[in-house]
Length: 202
Image (cartoon, rainbow, N blue to C red; front, side, top):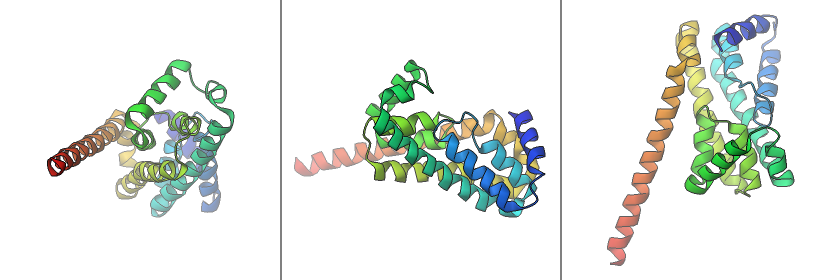
């Protein structure tokens, strides 16, 4: 992935106009949420290092375009069903994603949007399982926004020195740990609410 980052960074140097860089990011992140295998993170980091003053704005561009692509994926899943999903993901992975939806509901989208899980598979699955589009949109905006804005802040604050941290296992583990903490907090809150409700009714 580090090599990919450097290659993308060299390619981006050719963009003299930041509008072209933003357009490249928007197109990549939009397509990645539907079918494209390469995540937008390396390109966001590469452009952010070259244009640190625009890192946060570019992170916003990636967030919105990624969620827009996910909405298209949601619609395609609802329209074409599992045969479409089986073209981009193995059946066992699809089964695992659907199991996460059954156990965690909308939280599955938030987790996939923030962590390295295959977000496109979750987006299309959400359409297949007829997940409420508004809930899907809110969870996607929160998850994708948290992920890409975190990258934007790190690149803006630390520049190229943060590259290995973001592209290595440390950042991945950080996102997974953060998602686990959110799930644990939500579970505890739900448990507390349930017990309080029982005490009131009892």
